Structures are given as C-alpha cells and as structure tokens.
Image (tube, helix red, strand yellow):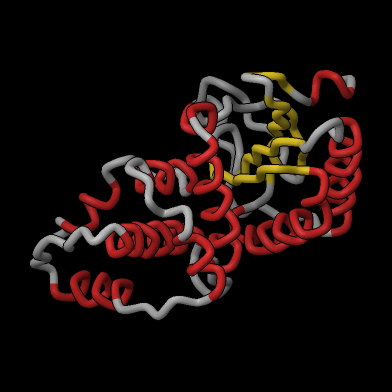
Length: 231
C-alpha cells in the first residue's frame, strides 16, 4: 500500500484511518501508547479519536486528521511508531478465533491495518462532534483501570461519562430501582472534576454525546437506558 492510499480526502479534510490489533487483556498498554503518540505528534494533527472494536479481531480503531500538508509526515510517524510498539510489546490473546462461525477471517494479533473500517458518520458532520470525540478519547486513556476487566472498563467508563454529560447539561437522573446501580450512578454524579474531566466538559454541550460515547466504547446506543433499568 502506497502512502497515498493511507489517507482520504473528504470535505476538504485529510483523514487517516488505521487499526491496531491488540489483545484486549493488554489493551491498557496500547491506550498508554496512543496517549504518548498524541503528545509527541500533536503538532502534525488537528484530531485524534479512538474506537474499541472486536470486529475481525480485538482492536482499537483510530481516526486522525492531519494538519496542513503533514499527511506524508504523519503516515511515516504512524508506521514507525506503532510497528515498533507492536514489535517491542506484543500481546497474547487468550481467545481462539471462532473459525467457521464468522463470515470474514480475523486479522492476526499485533497487526497494523490501514482503512479497515468506515469513518464514524458523526465525525463528518461537524467539528463540534470531532472535538468531543477527541476529548472523550483522551479521557478514556486516563480512566481505563488496569485492575478491572476489559468489559467492566467499557461499561463503567461509558456509564461514568454518560452521567457526567447529563450533569453538565442539567438533566436530572431518572429514579433507579436497583440500589447497587443507584449508588454507583450517584457516585458518578458526585465525582469532583479533575483537569482532564474539566477539559472534556468544555466540549460536552452536545446532543448526541451519549451516542458518540457508546460508539467509541463499542456499546449499543441504548446502553445507558439499559444500565439504568437493570433489575
């Protein structure tokens, strides 16, 4: 694949879409690496957002928008940085590939793939959506708990951010009959702001915020409603 095939021009914006296939048991290592990559290379980009996925393999999808005429430079940085990371920090998946039960063959673990997914439609709609998804991505890398399981992290982070979004928009929580869940949700509501959370809230006046959060965390759009109504 040539450098020209590693970016797309849509709406006068240069997009870079790639996936890093990495075992979910070790995903915290990849998240920390993504955070470091952003800090090192943010002078070349105007947007970075991440999306958990298990389609054709455990992976994180990344969408990056390059700044000015830095497309080639950014492609080279991505290739060098993530291929070196995968070589030096390979993950080992504990899950066997379900051959015969899926239509498309899974990609190998510890693999970098370009253009293996579609750009989320909400990113194409507005810069406001892009700013929110980037702020959410940076917050996710900070909130992910290495002591908790992959699935528990997805649910707890999505729940926490959804509650914080409602609080910021002055939307009251509904009555929750399950006492354990009610106490957890209330603790999310009472959480004191920290630097990254305060920065995220600058972009949180957005109607489709919960939908974007669910997309990034690979959860159904009605996830939060399902959580609140759990018996």
